[in-house]
Image (tube, rainbow, N blue to C red; front, side, top):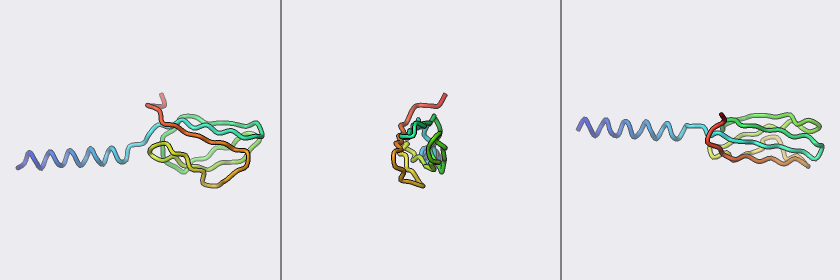
Amino acid sequence: MARYTLFFAVLYAALIYTATAQAACITQFSSTGGGGGGGCEPSGGPKGISLPNGPYIEYSLSSSCELTILNGPFEGVTASASEVASCS
C-alpha cells in the first residue's frame, strides 16, 4: 500500500511540475515605421517592448508560446512567437 501512495505522490508532483513549466519562446516584432525587435524569453507575462520609431507593445506568452498583445491593436505592427527547445 505504501508503494502505491508513493507512486501517486510522485505522479502528482510530476503533473504539477509539467503544468507550471515555462516554455522558451522566440518573439519577433516589426512596424511599418522601420522599427523591430524581439528575442528569446520564457512564457508568461505581462512583458513589453518599445519598438524604435514605433509604439510600446505590452504582451503575454502562453505556455505554448501563443502571443497576445494586451494594449493593442496597432496599425502597421506585426508580431509572432514560436516555441524553441531553449534560449541558450
